[in-house]
Amino acid sequence: MTRFALFGVATVALAAIAVPEAIAATPYDGYWSVVIVTHRGACEPAYRSAVSIVNGYVRGGDGIANVYGRVSRNGRVSVIVTSGTQNARGSGRLGRGRGAGVWSGRGSIGYCSGRWSAQRR
Image 1 (cartoon, rainbow, N blue to C red):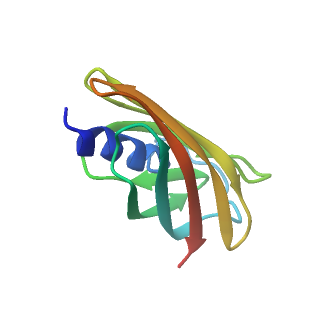
Image 2 (cartoon, one colour; image 1 turned 90 degrees about the vertical axis):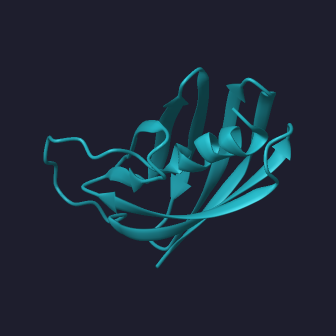
């Protein structure tokens, strides 16, 4: 994959596929704008993506990666993203209107990492 593709995997680290089990809606449910910035590695320097959270599960992405993750009741975010042989993990915390955290990934171009921030739309 290219440098952009690994960054895309990290980008969708904040997006996940819906899980069929229904849980109660969380205070974090809704649409979010996420900005991902690379601080280490040869990935793209920055990227913005729209995601949604439904029943505590993050949804969104570009269809290239498989993403699994969740937002807990206290706002902790944890996701895993895989795309072929590449993977990325993201973690952090959401508040009712904003959030932030870190991400890291490994792929054919090596290791990349950085920070993300989110704002409710």
